[in-house]
Image 1 (cartoon, rainbow, N blue to C red):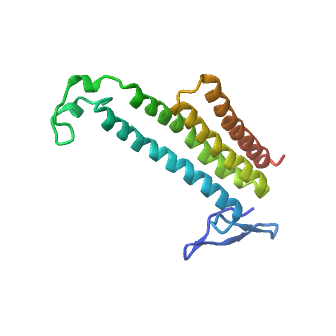
Image 2: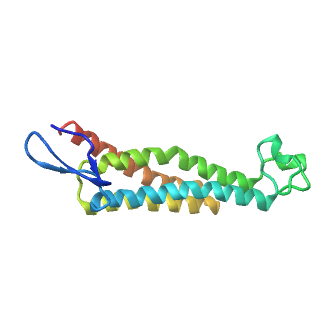
Image 3: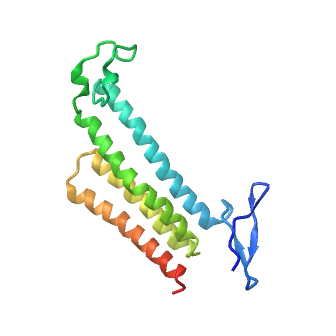
Amino acid sequence: MTSFACWRRGRACHVETSEGARLDRMSLHDPLFATYAVAATLMILKAVAMSWLTVIRMVQAKGGYRSPEDIKKTPMNPAPDPAQLLPNERVERIRRIQMNDLESLPYFLVAGLLYILTQPSLRLAQWLLYGYVASRLLHFLAYLTGQIHEIRATLWTVGSLILIFMTGRTLLVALGA
């Protein structure tokens, strides 16, 4: 079976397999790939926003810094104090949320891309990919507002089960099952 990426003038090409069937390559014009692209983009933007939220919280707290050079006198820090290197719970909470995202985001990006290559139904792909995004956004809100562990764990579990389903389906299709 022929399998390679083909791009002409910024558009995806079609590749013929040895069986003569046409394979559409990834394109934002394909509703299945566009669904993945929207979900992946939202998750990437969320991860980037967490960095900005950390900075905002550090500026508000005038602390929560981690590096000794952060407490040097500058226009942004006119009254440095060694206490600024002490952990600040508001800043640390955002850092924990960000670390949680960084632990799960790569798996989602790869699993989602491989999953759409299995050509699932558009409706199922939308439920899974957007369901993952919703579970991560709700997890963020639960963590940000200090909800109990069971709420966060439930939302994490939903996202994890979605990843397991997508990767399991991908594995079965790849094995020809």
